[in-house]
Length: 619
Image 1 (spheres, one colour):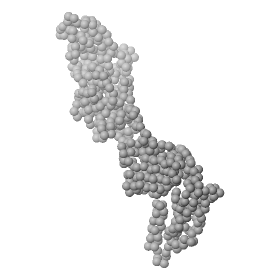
Image 2 (tube, one colour):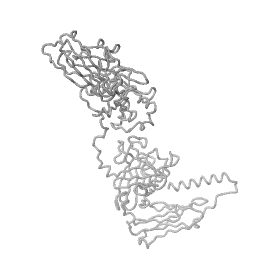
Image 3 (tube, helix red, strand yellow):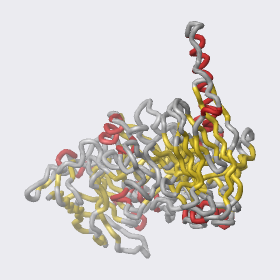
């Protein structure tokens, strides 16, 4: 009826416009007398002895037929109707003429036998349950916001898309595309709720009912339907497809439907959206059968999260990862050339590189920041950090909450960020959200903000790196090179009050910083540095171990390389040689010390101890 009403409304508007714009002597054409309307309704008994096939012919010029044959409607000049079930059928005819609409008396045709071949098809069975049966369908979104089969209750397709098992993967023209959004992340698509049900029946005829629980203006509807199994279309008469209120005015005919897919458990039905509602497109509604819904069991498997998410650390392990260990420090930089930032939803991220986030945050300013800035975590004279950004170096202390995997900087401090940019961290509490066993190559993901409502983390990817100016070839040397050292400036003793005897050749954080015994710019090697030293005046307590591990700790000017050297045994007064094998070329130094572990605790008189640096050899 809706199509007929639209046609009549257009005709009336045309009549009003015509009469208002013309001179009085003009008028609409004459209304055709019913006796002058020529049409035929023919039952083809040769094809169907029971009269199931009925041919409709309209033979009147300058007029348009609107057939209503009980199981459907048509405006064709010639059409064929096939009734699957016996019974009396009333075929109505309304005719649109220049002078108005002429309604003719209905014609009654009697079908004496069933011809179930017209509905005995896999698609008819999938839709209705089969001859003599009925089947109920639900929109795939319930009052709990759950979609049981599809990602959501509605998908979007181009105007030339249709039956998905035919054509070029469901494409039948130029306007072919699709978007299949998940409802959980796109809840604007449809309000959560119970949308009711649709029931298709083949019990004595092709009958359909719909209960529109979310659209009270439609309520309960009853009518007929016709499934064209070859063209993959579905026509609903006097019944509208279940849909949401937000789209109610955006579809001209909710009974003119393309079938996109139809199986025993699922059904996808598309209607054409009007051009003035965000553009013409096929709104494809996703349905599940009542049987499927009633027997559906939620997936109880654990949600898949990213590798390394919510890591567990042994006591002290996170501090070891950040700093490299006691008397050590490590540089961390943003992974600007890789994947620097991500939104982690329920433990799962989606970015793959900086290009993934350029449309919502990452930009050239962040590229520059990642290239030239860093943060270093140290275990020198406590737990400290140094941040280098925009040519400015700041420092402070930090702590670690091992229960929550949180790094807490001084109040007001934060990780690296671009000034004034919304993405920049503002918190001094940083959560280690993801970590890996091979952190040296894969880094850490550090969270700076969390949305508890959506279970989302904003995380930055930090990797081990070099400070600005570092990472070059280190100057290199073709052979051994000696470095001069002024022993009058050697700092010795239990400097960190940890029981170790330290020989401090140079320490940017120590007493040697202002007046060192060597020129740090002379330090340049590609392979190793070797120190020979002499200890004297050692007088050990009774019961002392008498044998102690000794090693060099070295860090070059940008903390790459840095770490412990080879360990030797020190067992009293004498001359010893230690070496540090560099994993990469070194240029300059920040820390250059020798530690004899546990020796200071066993020395009777520290003031009697003397030490000299006999040689420093680089290769």
